Length: 131
Image 1: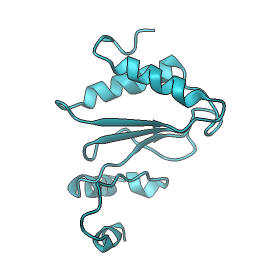
Image 2 (image 1 turned 135 degrees about the vertical axis):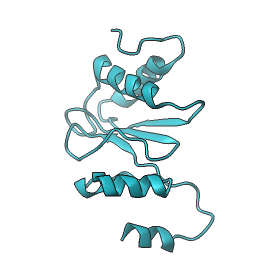
Image 3 (image 1 turned 90 degrees about the horizontal axis):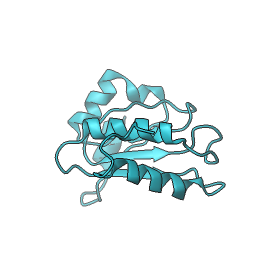
Protein backbone atom coordinates (compact mmCIF):
# COMPACT_ATOMS: atom_id res chain seq x y z
CA UNK A 1 0.00 0.00 0.00
CA UNK A 2 2.86 2.40 0.79
CA UNK A 3 4.40 1.67 -2.59
CA UNK A 4 1.10 2.62 -4.28
CA UNK A 5 0.96 5.83 -2.25
CA UNK A 6 4.51 6.80 -3.23
CA UNK A 7 3.78 6.01 -6.88
CA UNK A 8 0.73 8.29 -6.78
CA UNK A 9 2.74 11.35 -5.77
CA UNK A 10 3.38 13.93 -8.47
CA UNK A 11 6.92 14.23 -9.79
CA UNK A 12 9.10 17.08 -8.61
CA UNK A 13 8.17 17.00 -4.93
CA UNK A 14 10.90 17.87 -2.45
CA UNK A 15 12.50 14.88 -0.72
CA UNK A 16 10.25 13.08 1.75
CA UNK A 17 10.92 11.49 5.12
CA UNK A 18 8.53 9.09 6.82
CA UNK A 19 7.73 9.22 10.54
CA UNK A 20 6.07 5.90 11.29
CA UNK A 21 3.93 5.28 14.34
CA UNK A 22 3.01 1.64 13.85
CA UNK A 23 5.16 -1.41 14.48
CA UNK A 24 4.55 -2.76 10.97
CA UNK A 25 6.93 -0.12 9.60
CA UNK A 26 9.83 -1.58 11.58
CA UNK A 27 9.80 -5.15 10.29
CA UNK A 28 12.85 -6.31 8.31
CA UNK A 29 10.75 -6.23 5.12
CA UNK A 30 9.56 -2.68 5.74
CA UNK A 31 13.06 -1.45 6.58
CA UNK A 32 14.35 -3.05 3.38
CA UNK A 33 11.58 -1.26 1.44
CA UNK A 34 12.55 2.13 2.88
CA UNK A 35 16.21 1.43 2.11
CA UNK A 36 15.47 0.29 -1.45
CA UNK A 37 13.29 3.35 -2.09
CA UNK A 38 15.92 5.62 -0.49
CA UNK A 39 13.21 6.96 1.79
CA UNK A 40 14.47 8.21 5.16
CA UNK A 41 12.63 6.68 8.08
CA UNK A 42 12.53 9.26 10.86
CA UNK A 43 14.13 8.19 14.13
CA UNK A 44 11.54 9.54 16.55
CA UNK A 45 11.72 9.50 20.33
CA UNK A 46 8.36 9.71 22.06
CA UNK A 47 9.25 8.25 25.42
CA UNK A 48 8.13 4.80 24.29
CA UNK A 49 4.63 5.82 23.20
CA UNK A 50 5.23 4.87 19.58
CA UNK A 51 7.53 2.25 18.09
CA UNK A 52 10.84 3.40 16.67
CA UNK A 53 14.19 2.08 15.54
CA UNK A 54 17.58 3.68 15.35
CA UNK A 55 18.24 2.81 11.74
CA UNK A 56 19.36 4.76 8.71
CA UNK A 57 17.36 3.77 5.65
CA UNK A 58 18.52 6.77 3.58
CA UNK A 59 20.17 10.14 3.92
CA UNK A 60 19.63 12.74 5.18
CA UNK A 61 18.97 11.43 8.67
CA UNK A 62 15.95 12.90 10.45
CA UNK A 63 15.51 12.75 14.21
CA UNK A 64 12.43 13.97 16.11
CA UNK A 65 12.37 14.42 19.84
CA UNK A 66 8.84 14.56 21.26
CA UNK A 67 9.81 14.34 24.94
CA UNK A 68 11.07 11.46 27.05
CA UNK A 69 8.34 11.65 29.70
CA UNK A 70 5.30 13.83 29.16
CA UNK A 71 4.71 13.95 25.42
CA UNK A 72 5.77 17.36 24.05
CA UNK A 73 6.31 18.63 27.60
CA UNK A 74 9.42 17.07 29.13
CA UNK A 75 13.12 17.84 29.05
CA UNK A 76 15.79 15.44 27.78
CA UNK A 77 18.70 14.91 30.13
CA UNK A 78 22.28 15.38 28.98
CA UNK A 79 22.73 11.62 29.29
CA UNK A 80 19.77 10.93 26.97
CA UNK A 81 21.00 13.44 24.39
CA UNK A 82 24.55 12.11 24.65
CA UNK A 83 23.27 8.62 23.88
CA UNK A 84 21.65 9.90 20.68
CA UNK A 85 24.71 11.98 19.79
CA UNK A 86 26.96 8.96 20.16
CA UNK A 87 24.67 6.92 17.91
CA UNK A 88 24.55 9.69 15.28
CA UNK A 89 28.34 9.85 15.22
CA UNK A 90 28.51 6.07 14.83
CA UNK A 91 26.37 6.10 11.67
CA UNK A 92 27.62 9.28 10.00
CA UNK A 93 29.12 8.81 6.57
CA UNK A 94 31.34 11.62 5.34
CA UNK A 95 29.48 14.89 5.28
CA UNK A 96 26.01 13.36 5.56
CA UNK A 97 23.23 15.69 6.64
CA UNK A 98 21.45 15.20 9.95
CA UNK A 99 18.33 17.12 10.96
CA UNK A 100 17.13 17.05 14.55
CA UNK A 101 13.73 18.47 15.45
CA UNK A 102 12.72 19.04 19.06
CA UNK A 103 8.98 19.03 19.59
CA UNK A 104 9.10 19.09 23.39
CA UNK A 105 8.16 22.75 23.34
CA UNK A 106 5.59 22.90 26.16
CA UNK A 107 7.59 24.46 28.97
CA UNK A 108 10.22 25.76 26.57
CA UNK A 109 12.46 22.67 26.65
CA UNK A 110 12.95 22.35 22.89
CA UNK A 111 15.36 25.23 22.40
CA UNK A 112 17.61 24.27 25.33
CA UNK A 113 17.66 20.62 24.28
CA UNK A 114 18.38 21.52 20.64
CA UNK A 115 21.29 23.73 21.63
CA UNK A 116 22.69 21.06 23.93
CA UNK A 117 22.36 18.37 21.25
CA UNK A 118 24.13 20.59 18.73
CA UNK A 119 26.94 21.15 21.22
CA UNK A 120 27.24 17.40 21.86
CA UNK A 121 27.68 16.83 18.12
CA UNK A 122 30.19 19.63 17.64
CA UNK A 123 33.78 18.76 16.66
CA UNK A 124 34.95 20.37 19.92
CA UNK A 125 33.17 17.61 21.86
CA UNK A 126 35.05 14.45 20.86
CA UNK A 127 33.37 12.25 23.46
CA UNK A 128 29.59 12.78 23.41
CA UNK A 129 28.94 10.51 26.38
CA UNK A 130 31.23 12.44 28.72
CA UNK A 131 29.10 14.19 31.30
